[in-house]
Image (cartoon, rainbow, N blue to C red):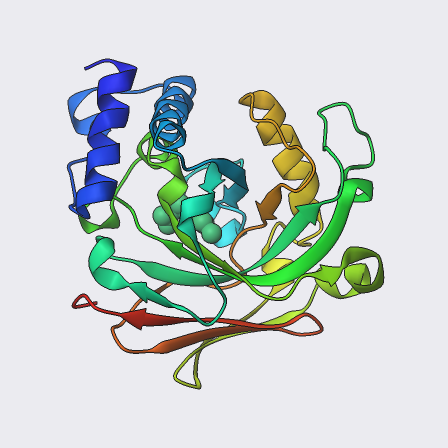
Length: 258
Ligand code: 0L1
Ligand code: MG
């Protein structure tokens, strides 16, 4: 199977919400090939009128990186069609086995070019965020290359209220984070779980985007990475993340069997 065929297989799995075998079971991929599969998959979405609006980082927590035996973060792409409005419902039946994690999001006021040596100067706004990840592989099991090809398990994301970065920058590095289901806390953590300091996510996104040829124009959203472990979604639940000093963001889960 070539890169386009592998991308089409994953794309079909996303659209059918059906788990598939790991690509690496059939064809070992290099990391560069895995990113090529990711780009080809995103090109299919763009071709259907779903534009890229930003990027997301994965494996930003030391624990998760160690578990996967990796020493660097991974980058995926966010498309407009995968955003869920704060407080709205997401249908679990449209995903395979979704999990949710609390994050922080940045929005760029100007382009973040690979040459910029002060990446934080390009950030205009910051917001609390939720990411719903959904590996398209059976049992959420994959190699590093598999998950990169699968757009780093990106499925949906929800953004809270955007706040001016200049005034809130001091709150971002080490803010307390809670993930709650129907008001019951499920996970507690800190934005410092994101690369030791969530602000470092902007430079990491710049570096990874430059390496894999992803532009970061003004207006791009950067999802920084998870502040706690991801939790399996359950039907009929209000999922809320609260980030100290930045506020909250929520999504309601509907449909599916969890
Ligand atoms: O956003 C993330 O941290 C997910 C990275 C991919 C690994 C996973 O699916 O757990
Ligand atoms: Mg994430």
